[in-house]
Length: 432
Image (cartoon, rainbow, N blue to C red; front, top):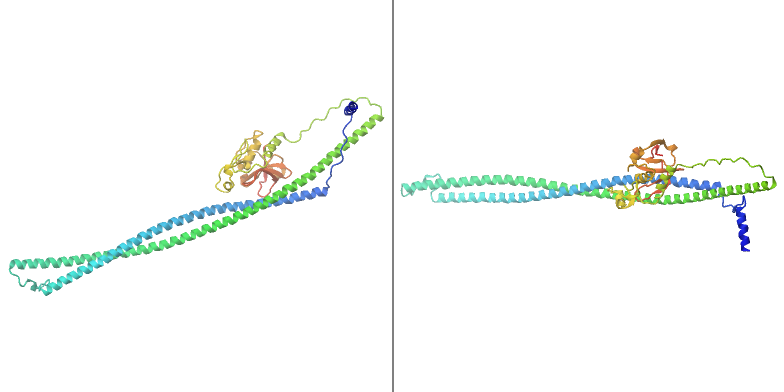
């Protein structure tokens, strides 16, 4: 029995025109459902484009605020250094003023003591009848030698006392002038110290204000980034839904083709059974095979597509694949690009086109001028799209149908996204 069943099945497989029956028809989504899905995709894609523009502006402002914070921080550092210098100058001025005041006071006391000593000498001379310049100072001399000695002594004492008094007076006057200058210098140093303290307070307030502005902007950028990520998720789900509907439609059309071929084969078999065998026809050459697409373009697209989900790293990527990024001193560093393996936008293009022997430089502005320019409306699969002056801001690979693959920015990864037309260059670059 088993051998009989096997023989029947084998005969059925060898019979001309024998084929498996077409299965029941798969679901066939309506045009309205597919169109509604496409409209939802378009709406989400437009919102993603709008959020991308807003995020670009927010991150550009954040970079400007980073620069402003750094500048204000340096001004605050300068103010602190100036304040320390002003305090040192004021301290020296106080010490100098205290020293000159003490010297001036000592000079005044010296003048007073010299004056009192001179007054006492004059009084004693008067009481003893030896007032300077008076003849009575010579009375009572015991002889010529005594008289000469009295004259010399009076002249010496009187002259020395007056000279000392004059010198002390001059010293006091000079010391008073020095003290006055020191006091003026102290006043100036105090004013400069006050100004330096105010400058330090102003600089610190400016730095704090800049830091607050930067923090607020970072929060706004993060909120936009989160919103954009959410909408991108919604876009991906909408695309999956549309692709699912379109896949069902394609599957249904294949079923229709299979069903048509089955019906045609059944009709042909019926006609052969009912009619005499026709004379053999001359052999007919098979139509030439048609190659769909460009092999070089598909190689480029495939090399880019195999890295979907690989993280963005600024400065990352080369002809062989993803590499560690490089420091940028700002946003990329905050995401750790300089120690993470990945691609930036131009690095992804380098790797994709290296597969067909085209070795691009690692800069989107140079890549923009690496091939033939075609109007944006004539872009086709495998062309490069650019943003910013001279194409120097961003580059992506066009996939056709309004979609592209790109390595967008720090914190993201290689992805497929709708083409963003804000800031896009009016020409695409074609290398193949």
